[in-house]
Amino acid sequence: MNNSEGAQMKKQNSRQLFKTGFSGNEKMIKLSDLQLMQLKQILLEMLLDFITVANKYSLNYTMSGGSVLGTVRHGGFIPWDDDIDINLPRKDYNRFLKIFEQELGDRYVLCTPEYTHDHGMLCAQMKKKGTVYRSFNELSKEEEACGICMDIFVVENTYNNPLGRRMHGMACLVLGYISTCRKTFHDMHYIQKYLEKGSAAEKIFRKKARIGGFFCWLSLDHVTRIASGCYSACKNTQSKYVSIPSGRGHFFGELQLREDLCETVEAQFEGTSVRIPQNSDRYLSSLYGNCYMQLPPLEKRESHPIMEIEFEKK
Image (tube, rainbow, N blue to C red):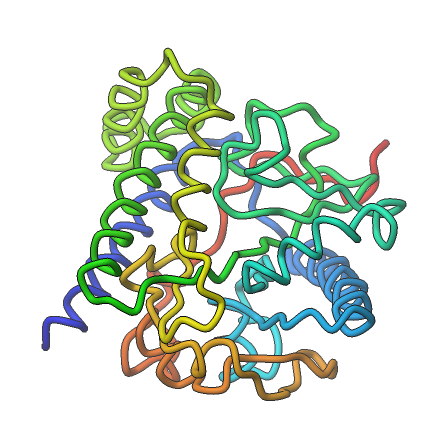
């Protein structure tokens, strides 16, 4: 096993801690096949609405993360997956913020690290009105901010100079981690009810909450905006490299050549034409390892812990 594959396995194992850490709680919801199908149908409708707007305004989106993997490996959703992820370059994301209310505000709510109170996350989320979806990130939020959602990750410019790029990446990692810890401290009262006592996940959450407590003199919104500002610090829209600091691989795991990530090709997702990165092989290999086309064993198949879900509010 080479260093890259070892790093990938370590990242994937750490994500599994969250799944196993919540699994022992009887309050968790395990979706039936019918419920998972309903959820995917709503997500697909949301994706179609987003693509319609993206095409209308020439927004250079791509599918992101597991949604690229699903497109390439399955021609749609990963069978056990329960979300859709989108990438938007910073300049297109800023345009999307301006047009969202006019184009989609009647059906959806847009929660962002820049403007949404207590959002506490460094990616944006487009949430469907009239639905409820709570995972561990939404436990402290009002019902209106907890709809079924698509995650929108910003593709950030970074510096051509290797030292500048390295410093940018390290700053993003540090501030992103502090933001996550501050969010955990904010939510820990709610999260602890769902954690399996003594699990590795409980230990990680408590450690993050303790670290977040050192920053309690700063509001959650303030910490989130500081981190988001660091992510978007480079203004060179023609930089050789780009990254998605809020993505699953964080800054260095998501670092790509601009032409590989931002140049797109069309592919089919559940019969719908979508865009994926031009060099999807390099992108997916960096996130999931070189064997990404092989199905993972059952115990390594990722899904989100769900605490509450309603397809229509009662």
